[in-house]
Image (cartoon, rainbow, N blue to C red):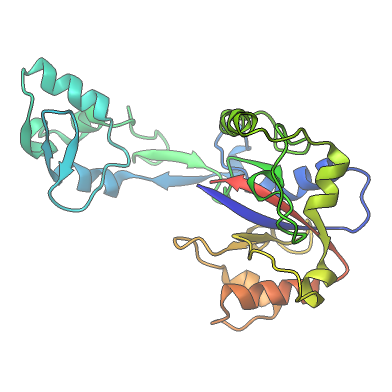
Length: 274
């Protein structure tokens, strides 16, 4: 999925790339290869896998699954299931995974992406950055010019970004096919950076409300600097407290509070994938 984040940065900067790198670094999705152990939290999948083990489904001749209850397929490997049923010479099946493999640990190894329990917790799951919100980002991107109220086609390759990405490469190829022009760093900045005080006062320019807002680096704890309107995310109480917002403040109110608090800053509009 893709979102639009407004990232608050100082008005004066030597390098917007560096400012965005530093401001967004804490929110990268990743694990032990990206962060020190003390920055990670255990994402426990055991209860979900137990539910999957008991879930009833129908495997169809066209190699698709029909869930007979809620879809709980997130950790399932359809390829492994297909290989197993093919080996059993079955082109269809209706039942539960527990019927195919009664032993829970064997089921996890055979039909999911997990191969063993975590040695530290004794549970199934992964050690991940609990503040992870993005896989990659780029200045403007598919939201090029939105923050300044002048949407425009994105360049073939954005000069300011989190780095190489397969997803961005695919989007770049699509842009090429559609005839988009190249982009320079100066043009990107002009199109995608706006003064916060302008965002507050200029009501004549039609702007898209962002998916997320990121507070300046160092203004408070990292865990309170990102808030968004993604339905399965909750705005942290510490963020509301820092911005002086009521406990029941909605996303629009929170943005307004952030703008008022940091009216002397600039905001950079980035497209991010999550």
